[in-house]
Length: 74
Image 1 (tube, rainbow, N blue to C red):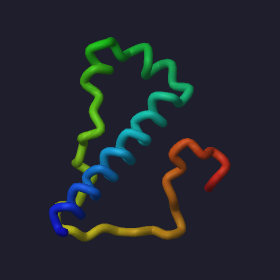
Image 2 (image 1 turned 60 degrees about the vertical axis):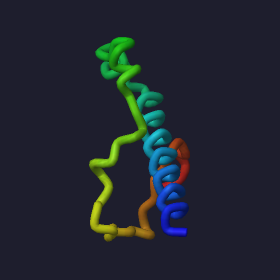
Image 3 (image 1 turned 30 degrees about the horizontal axis):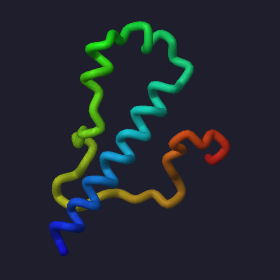
Image 4 (image 1 turned 90 degrees about the horizontal axis):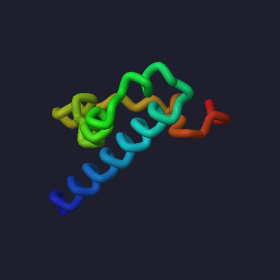
């Protein structure tokens, strides 16, 4: 059960990372997009984990949420 839970958590992390990367790329940021070449786009990966705390503790702010494309929610 612990291994299956870890797999689910990893999948959720990759999904959220993918949504966050897509949001950055879809912003009206022509300066950033003009600096990226095809090799840069191939190097993009949702497998980043530097923002993950390896000790199993995290701060949860229930008053703040990730917008993830929904610009109407604050």
